[in-house]
Length: 292
Ligand code: SF4
Image (cartoon, rainbow, N blue to C red; front, side, top):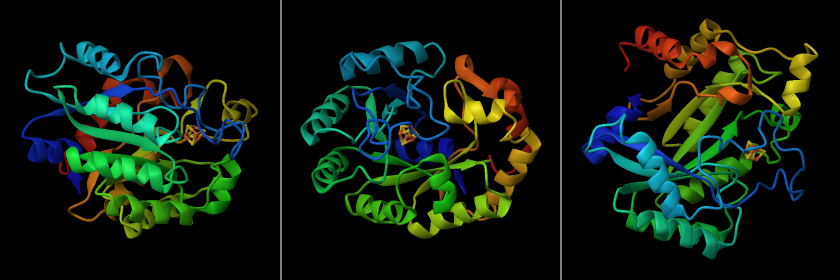
């Protein structure tokens, strides 16, 4: 495996940070097209809690994100405009084209990253992504979470795994670099099932992986089940034991963008070990020092 920091340093010649952006879009799993309640773990913010308000122009959101980061990062840092919340391609193609063009024109933006669902990539949207990828490095992040369709149905993902497989192929044809999100700790999954999802994403042709443990967030369907004692979360050691095994499956030239996520503290219910970011970073650095 290659770490994201090494990969970005080699590709861009310096560190890269993400400037999170919210587009004024929703998700077909919330507005009724595919479902109404969203995935059982997804917060009302659609995973965009770190981004600015979607009512602001894209350029302004990038400026805001950069000014928040600027005191903490080296001067020669480059930025990835990260369209993070909900389903960034669930909109009119011209709207997406306009937003991506606005981001590309920002002088500090050196790459784009677009988070979306594999079932929201119709041909006109793929054309927009292809145009963008011809201008600037483009990463597309797909929330697979699991390759087990039964587990996916249980949390309400709303698409079959074969749709993900087709999306990876289509995106790579467009010149996008595909990053796949995997959640470890989904109810109904044991370690072998989690590892199977990693193998599945690798076989499907993903370029990179992002791991996260299952968070229980306020106002999600999982909150209720957790409070009723019907589901559990992973402990820190248990989670990283699984990640360590998963990493042993990852090809040498594949980029691992994240070993765990960073749940928004204001709405985090469990697992609380994830709230102490410094402790988690120290643990990762100690445990994975030979890989990082
Ligand atoms: S597809 Fe993404 S944004 Fe939509 S409900 Fe699921 S996790 Fe949330």
